Image (cartoon, rainbow, N blue to C red):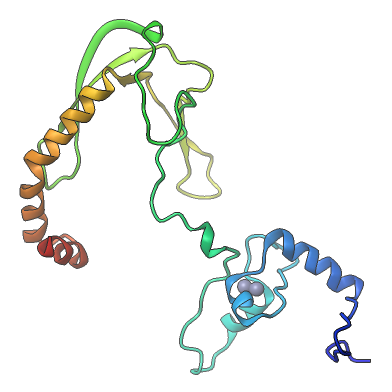
Length: 207
Ligand SMILES: [Zn+2]
Ligand SMILES: [Zn+2]
Protein backbone atom coordinates (compact mmCIF):
# COMPACT_ATOMS: atom_id res chain seq x y z
CA UNK A 1 0.00 0.00 0.00
CA UNK A 2 1.33 3.40 -0.91
CA UNK A 3 2.03 5.51 2.15
CA UNK A 4 0.48 8.54 0.54
CA UNK A 5 -2.87 6.75 0.24
CA UNK A 6 -5.06 7.70 3.17
CA UNK A 7 -7.67 5.28 4.41
CA UNK A 8 -10.55 7.24 5.87
CA UNK A 9 -9.36 9.02 9.00
CA UNK A 10 -6.87 6.38 10.08
CA UNK A 11 -3.40 7.84 10.42
CA UNK A 12 -0.79 5.97 8.46
CA UNK A 13 2.09 4.78 10.61
CA UNK A 14 5.43 6.32 9.70
CA UNK A 15 8.40 4.20 8.72
CA UNK A 16 11.14 4.13 11.43
CA UNK A 17 13.38 6.35 9.27
CA UNK A 18 10.59 8.91 8.81
CA UNK A 19 9.76 8.77 12.49
CA UNK A 20 13.37 9.55 13.37
CA UNK A 21 13.35 12.47 10.91
CA UNK A 22 10.10 13.79 12.32
CA UNK A 23 11.45 13.77 15.86
CA UNK A 24 14.60 15.56 14.71
CA UNK A 25 12.51 18.13 12.86
CA UNK A 26 10.44 18.66 15.98
CA UNK A 27 13.64 19.46 17.83
CA UNK A 28 15.04 21.82 15.20
CA UNK A 29 11.60 22.90 13.91
CA UNK A 30 10.63 22.87 10.25
CA UNK A 31 11.99 25.75 8.20
CA UNK A 32 9.74 28.62 7.09
CA UNK A 33 9.59 27.46 3.47
CA UNK A 34 8.63 23.86 4.28
CA UNK A 35 6.08 25.02 6.84
CA UNK A 36 4.41 27.35 4.33
CA UNK A 37 4.31 24.58 1.74
CA UNK A 38 3.21 22.05 4.38
CA UNK A 39 5.88 19.59 3.35
CA UNK A 40 8.27 17.48 5.38
CA UNK A 41 11.40 19.44 6.29
CA UNK A 42 14.36 17.07 6.03
CA UNK A 43 17.59 18.45 7.44
CA UNK A 44 20.94 17.90 5.81
CA UNK A 45 22.41 14.89 7.66
CA UNK A 46 25.89 16.45 7.72
CA UNK A 47 25.13 19.74 9.47
CA UNK A 48 21.47 19.51 10.36
CA UNK A 49 21.26 22.66 12.42
CA UNK A 50 23.06 25.14 10.24
CA UNK A 51 22.75 24.00 6.64
CA UNK A 52 19.79 24.39 4.29
CA UNK A 53 17.22 21.61 4.52
CA UNK A 54 16.95 19.27 1.53
CA UNK A 55 13.86 21.10 0.20
CA UNK A 56 15.55 24.50 0.28
CA UNK A 57 18.73 23.01 -1.20
CA UNK A 58 16.69 21.77 -4.18
CA UNK A 59 15.31 25.28 -4.75
CA UNK A 60 18.79 26.79 -4.45
CA UNK A 61 20.22 24.70 -7.27
CA UNK A 62 17.20 25.22 -9.57
CA UNK A 63 18.10 27.14 -12.69
CA UNK A 64 14.56 27.86 -13.80
CA UNK A 65 13.41 31.43 -14.35
CA UNK A 66 10.08 30.54 -12.75
CA UNK A 67 11.61 30.87 -9.30
CA UNK A 68 11.85 34.60 -8.80
CA UNK A 69 12.76 34.65 -5.15
CA UNK A 70 14.33 32.36 -2.60
CA UNK A 71 13.91 32.55 1.12
CA UNK A 72 16.83 31.34 3.19
CA UNK A 73 16.32 28.11 5.13
CA UNK A 74 15.44 29.46 8.56
CA UNK A 75 13.90 27.41 11.35
CA UNK A 76 12.24 30.38 12.95
CA UNK A 77 8.79 31.18 14.27
CA UNK A 78 7.35 34.55 13.40
CA UNK A 79 6.34 34.93 17.05
CA UNK A 80 10.02 34.61 18.06
CA UNK A 81 10.90 37.86 16.31
CA UNK A 82 12.05 40.62 18.66
CA UNK A 83 11.73 43.85 16.66
CA UNK A 84 13.58 45.98 19.20
CA UNK A 85 15.99 45.44 22.04
CA UNK A 86 13.99 44.81 25.19
CA UNK A 87 16.62 46.44 27.35
CA UNK A 88 19.29 44.96 29.57
CA UNK A 89 22.48 44.01 27.82
CA UNK A 90 23.03 41.17 30.26
CA UNK A 91 26.14 42.74 31.78
CA UNK A 92 24.77 42.43 35.29
CA UNK A 93 22.00 40.76 37.24
CA UNK A 94 21.70 43.62 39.70
CA UNK A 95 18.54 44.67 37.84
CA UNK A 96 16.35 43.33 35.06
CA UNK A 97 15.05 44.89 31.86
CA UNK A 98 15.27 48.64 31.40
CA UNK A 99 14.96 49.71 35.04
CA UNK A 100 18.53 50.61 35.90
CA UNK A 101 19.18 51.34 39.55
CA UNK A 102 21.90 53.15 41.45
CA UNK A 103 24.77 51.02 42.73
CA UNK A 104 24.30 50.41 46.49
CA UNK A 105 26.48 52.88 48.44
CA UNK A 106 28.64 50.08 49.89
CA UNK A 107 29.61 48.94 46.42
CA UNK A 108 31.40 52.12 45.34
CA UNK A 109 35.17 51.70 45.23
CA UNK A 110 35.96 55.34 46.00
CA UNK A 111 34.59 58.90 46.03
CA UNK A 112 35.94 60.08 42.71
CA UNK A 113 33.36 60.97 40.03
CA UNK A 114 34.59 61.23 36.45
CA UNK A 115 32.74 62.96 33.63
CA UNK A 116 33.09 61.25 30.27
CA UNK A 117 31.63 62.35 26.93
CA UNK A 118 29.58 59.83 24.99
CA UNK A 119 29.54 60.46 21.25
CA UNK A 120 26.27 59.68 19.49
CA UNK A 121 26.91 60.23 15.81
CA UNK A 122 29.70 61.82 13.80
CA UNK A 123 27.17 64.27 12.39
CA UNK A 124 26.64 65.70 15.84
CA UNK A 125 29.89 66.48 17.58
CA UNK A 126 28.63 67.52 20.98
CA UNK A 127 29.00 64.50 23.27
CA UNK A 128 26.58 63.62 26.10
CA UNK A 129 28.31 64.32 29.42
CA UNK A 130 28.00 61.26 31.64
CA UNK A 131 29.20 61.15 35.24
CA UNK A 132 30.59 57.76 36.24
CA UNK A 133 32.19 56.30 39.34
CA UNK A 134 34.26 53.19 39.99
CA UNK A 135 32.45 50.36 41.77
CA UNK A 136 33.29 46.99 43.29
CA UNK A 137 31.99 44.35 40.88
CA UNK A 138 30.03 41.40 42.26
CA UNK A 139 29.91 37.88 40.82
CA UNK A 140 27.08 38.74 38.39
CA UNK A 141 28.84 41.75 36.84
CA UNK A 142 30.37 40.82 33.52
CA UNK A 143 33.67 42.55 32.89
CA UNK A 144 34.64 41.20 29.51
CA UNK A 145 33.19 41.47 26.07
CA UNK A 146 33.95 38.86 23.42
CA UNK A 147 33.39 38.92 19.73
CA UNK A 148 34.62 37.26 16.55
CA UNK A 149 35.16 38.83 13.20
CA UNK A 150 35.80 35.46 11.56
CA UNK A 151 34.35 32.13 12.67
CA UNK A 152 37.68 30.30 12.64
CA UNK A 153 39.57 32.99 14.54
CA UNK A 154 39.83 32.99 18.35
CA UNK A 155 37.54 35.49 20.11
CA UNK A 156 38.72 39.03 20.68
CA UNK A 157 38.40 40.11 24.28
CA UNK A 158 38.03 43.56 25.70
CA UNK A 159 38.05 44.20 29.44
CA UNK A 160 35.36 46.53 30.72
CA UNK A 161 36.54 48.75 33.55
CA UNK A 162 34.14 48.70 36.51
CA UNK A 163 32.55 52.14 36.18
CA UNK A 164 28.85 52.75 36.68
CA UNK A 165 26.60 55.81 36.40
CA UNK A 166 27.25 57.88 39.49
CA UNK A 167 23.61 58.96 39.60
CA UNK A 168 21.08 57.21 37.39
CA UNK A 169 18.30 59.82 37.72
CA UNK A 170 20.61 62.76 37.10
CA UNK A 171 21.96 61.03 33.97
CA UNK A 172 18.46 60.39 32.69
CA UNK A 173 17.63 64.11 33.18
CA UNK A 174 20.85 65.12 31.44
CA UNK A 175 20.02 62.81 28.55
CA UNK A 176 16.55 64.32 28.20
CA UNK A 177 18.05 67.82 28.10
CA UNK A 178 20.62 66.67 25.55
CA UNK A 179 17.93 65.32 23.20
CA UNK A 180 15.89 68.52 23.53
CA UNK A 181 18.93 70.65 22.82
CA UNK A 182 20.23 68.65 19.86
CA UNK A 183 17.45 66.70 18.19
CA UNK A 184 16.33 69.39 15.73
CA UNK A 185 19.85 70.23 14.66
CA UNK A 186 20.68 66.51 14.30
CA UNK A 187 17.63 65.94 12.08
CA UNK A 188 18.63 68.94 9.95
CA UNK A 189 22.18 67.61 9.53
CA UNK A 190 20.98 64.12 8.68
CA UNK A 191 18.68 65.47 5.97
CA UNK A 192 21.36 67.59 4.32
CA UNK A 193 24.19 65.02 4.46
CA UNK A 194 24.36 63.04 1.22
CA UNK A 195 26.28 60.16 2.82
CA UNK A 196 23.24 59.34 4.97
CA UNK A 197 21.03 56.56 3.64
CA UNK A 198 18.12 57.80 1.54
CA UNK A 199 15.48 56.07 3.67
CA UNK A 200 16.81 57.77 6.81
CA UNK A 201 16.86 61.16 5.09
CA UNK A 202 13.33 60.81 3.75
CA UNK A 203 12.03 59.63 7.14
CA UNK A 204 13.71 62.54 8.88
CA UNK A 205 12.44 65.11 6.40
CA UNK A 206 8.87 63.90 7.04
CA UNK A 207 9.52 64.31 10.77
ZN1 LIG B 1 12.70 22.74 5.23
ZN1 LIG C 1 14.59 24.85 4.42
